[in-house]
Amino acid sequence: MSGIMLIAYPNMGMVEILMLLPIWFIAHCISRLANLNNVRYIMGNGMYYFSMIVNIIGLILGFLMLLHPLFATEVLRYFISAYLILLGIEAVILAISKIGCKY
Image 1 (cartoon, rainbow, N blue to C red):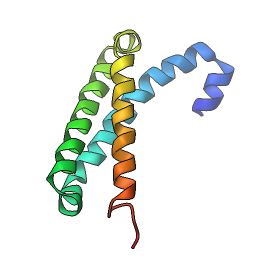
Image 2 (image 1 turned 135 degrees about the horizontal axis):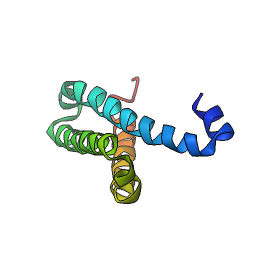
Image 3 (image 1 turned 180 degrees about the vertical axis):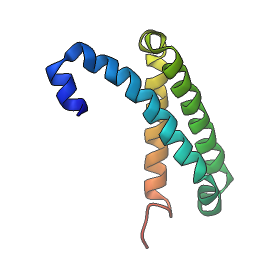
Image 4 (image 1 turned 90 degrees about the vertical axis):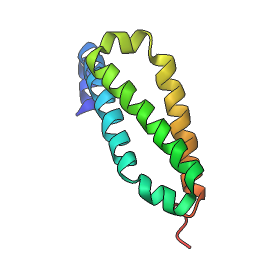
């Protein structure tokens, strides 16, 4: 539905993205925080604290974007991009760790 909305009504699609992105940030960070015990058990304290900090930053950014969507588009784009880079680093580390390997 989001793709159709972006094609058919580009301006409304931007409003939709401004509402869906913060919800995704919040939901993703909550799910990652819920699995932190597994990360600590398998990968140790270093990755545990890194993951916790990244996801708390994501929660804060998600709520800021939800409460102030125009502020988020203008000022927070740098913070959002930095967060997404950290999230990518975390995902790569998790993928090559014992959690991501089946064997």
